[in-house]
Length: 279
Image (cartoon, rainbow, N blue to C red; front, side, top):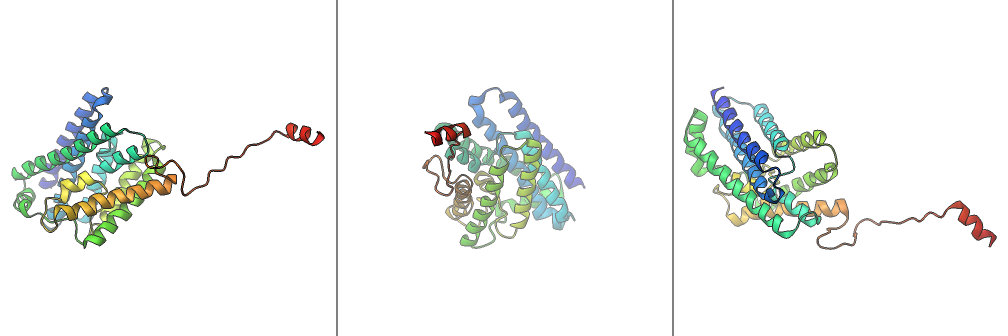
C-alpha cells in the first residue's frame, strides 16, 4: 500500500500542475499550444507511473491486473476532465488541421508543444523514480536505463495493431464529438483503457505519437525509425482512414466526397404542380 500511496501523491502533484496551467491561461486563446504542453505532460507523466505499477507492482507489490486497469482508466478519465478541449495527442491536432478547423502555424506549435510536454513528463518521472521512495520505485529506477519496450511484436504486426486501434478510436471520437462531455469523456476513457489492455502484448495501443515517444522510444530493442513507423505512421494512417470513412473525403486535401453521394432534393409545392398541369 505504501507504493500506491506514493503513486497517488505523484498523480495529485502532476494533476495540480496541469490544472493550474489551464486555469492561468484559459483566457488567452493564442497561447493554446501551452495548454497542449501541459496536457501532454500530464498524460505522459501519469501513464509512466501506471506503466511502473504494471511492470513492477504486479510481481513485486502483489498488485493484480484489475488494479492497474482501474488506475489507467482513472488517469484517462481525469485527463479528459481536467484538460477539456486540449488532447495532448498530435493525431487529434492533425485531425483538426485536415478538417480545416485549424491553420498551419497553430497546428505546428501544438504538435511541438505536445512532444516537449512528453519529454518533460519523462524527465519528471525519472527524477521521481530516482528518489526511490518505495521498493517499487527503487526497482524501477534500476530498470530505467534498460527499460522494456512496449513493442513486443514485429514491425509489420506493430504497425497493423496501431493502425487498427487508431482507426477504431478515431471513428468513435468523430462520432462522439458533438455529444455532451458527460457522455464523451467517460466513453473515450473506457475505449482507450480497453484498447490499451487488449493490445498490451503487442504495442500497448497508445494511439498518440507524443505519448509513445515518452513511454517507449528510449527503450532498446528497436531503432527510432522503427518506433516512428509503428507509433507515428501507424497512428496517423489509421486516423486519416477514419476521417475518410466518416466524412467521405479529407477537406484539407480534396473537397469532393469520394464515398458518399449527397443528393439534393428540391420539393415543388403542390399548388405549383397544379398550375403547371393546367397550363
